[in-house]
Length: 184
Length: 184
Image 1 (cartoon, rainbow over the protein chains, first blue to last red):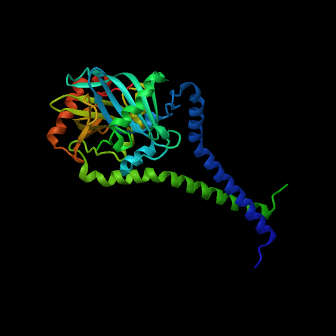
Image 2 (image 1 turned 135 degrees about the vertical axis):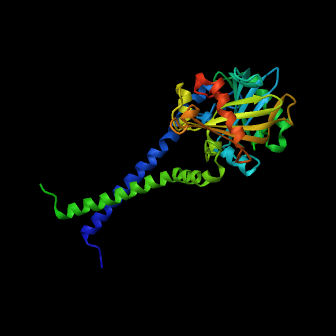
Image 3 (image 1 turned 90 degrees about the vertical axis):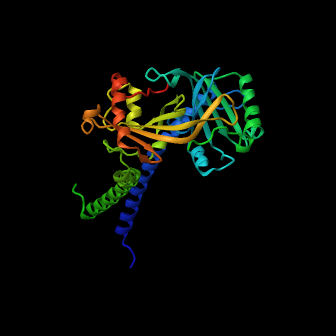
């Protein structure tokens, strides 16, 4: 039996509404992503690292912890490396090299004495934020990694950025030039 | 002008479809939450701490970092305290006391020498996971906090759990019995 004209109209009207609702849901769930892209683009020009053009990724403080570390004097720091979802999944799967899109961020603070426990040290002032971004084409000449080192939200000078790759290349080649291991 | 019978039917048919789509969206977005509740309930009986009945919260490794810390010998550990969303918001707002529903988790590892840097120590074997849960009614006699200390995923004995509150009460009363400060 052929559908009547009335049934056809009803069907197309309902379809349009369903599609409109679905479109709305997709748009709403995309907003945080679009905002983060806009923020990243907006900050790129002024706050990108020399040589590599790496910026501090928005929202990195919410990223999952990969591992803490302690650096003795003279640096005398506590550190914590966090990673985006691509980084975490690669770590959990033991996947090397890290896939393009991997971002690692190391937060660092001067160590200070805990006021409550003589045996403990805790974060004092923040010192640097250090970022590694994997893009095997863009950064082909440095193992696929772009580097950024920031103090007070601003990239440090070019001379310091020239030292990143040499050290990672010399000491961590077998693990795709990444020092930090996933804490058990 | 009154709507015709055909228009009424079309309207109600479309409304039902739109509501069904919205219901589906709500249900799908609830799935992760419902699963986490189910997992928490399932693990409660066997793996709850003595005295307090606190369990290891599912997904805590994904929670935001509050601060790392270092504990010298004889414990010789690296630690990292993470918190759920309620905890993070309270920290960021400087809100004391912490609201009910706050959960703090301290991860701890033996310190070990970095293979790459003589000056650095990194996480070795995991030692304990320590949990604080805020429920001002349930834990009224211990400052509103329930405590859980776990080794290899299992709660340690009652004697150890008897020591939690005394130390927190004696040394951190002015900050709602929480030692860890938000890293800057």
